[in-house]
Image (cartoon, rainbow, N blue to C red; front, top):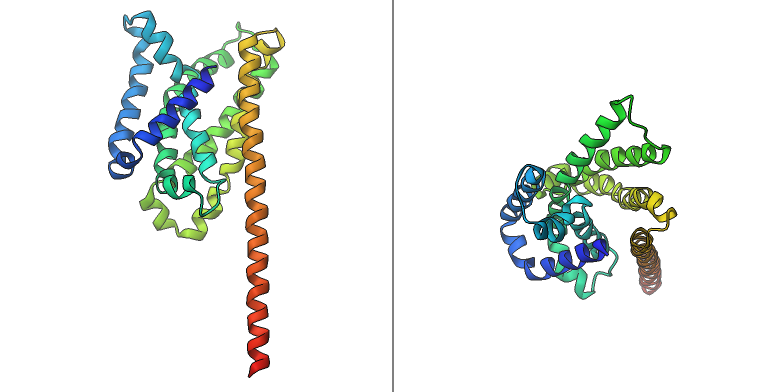
Length: 243
């Protein structure tokens, strides 16, 4: 349920602030940074229970960052002439940076906690948690270059071909996000937690839908490229015959 809430908030935010995000992205990056600082300091502040329950949970499980990553994912699976792609492709890079910044607090807090557990000789960690941490480390390694090269100035400096080559790592990044989440929720799900089971189902449904739409776009694009090539060959052949 938390993931659904984070996704809905991210969608509404993107629709409402689409123009503003494109015009003044630095403002939103600053807000994301300040929200992370607030989240990290929340344990040391006397906050009302409703604020912790209905706001900080967005950062605790990073469902808000995940919500924006899902939007970034799905913008890329619609065709060139679709309304969603034409409307939101211009802020896809900004959304990617925004999602990355929103995830920092989660990475720092849980990274510190798990590092302390790994270094401690008295705290037992189940094997699945080591897999979860390993996947998380790979995600961070992939996230850094993907987020940095989403900055338009760096994109231009790299050149389009080099940038596209690096951005292909976004596919394993998105896939590993879902693997990481399933590993995090696996133990409570096996224990019978309805919340964990629902969350895994929701995440997997989004992942399957993305995969289907991505493959569909690939097939459509491939057929179009083949048709264009045949049309060009036909025109060249008939032009040569006429001469």
